Length: 51
Image (cartoon, rainbow, N blue to C red; front, side, top):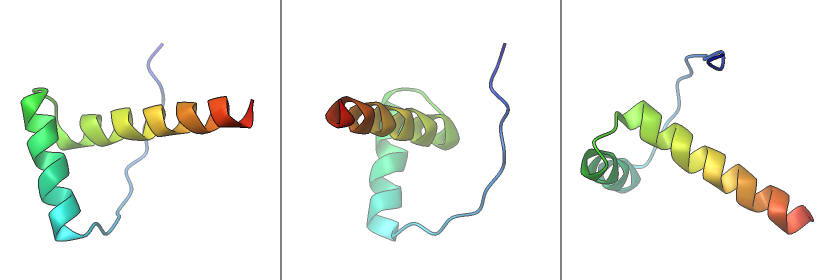
């Protein structure tokens, strides 16, 4: 079953946005998909640190 998705509006610094767009394109992903991937990985790392 696919996760429920919610649309949000955020503000991102232009240099960060340009870098994220570039990385998403390298992986042939949409910007939204890439941001989700990065956030999921970050949350996993935080969980590992918590132990």
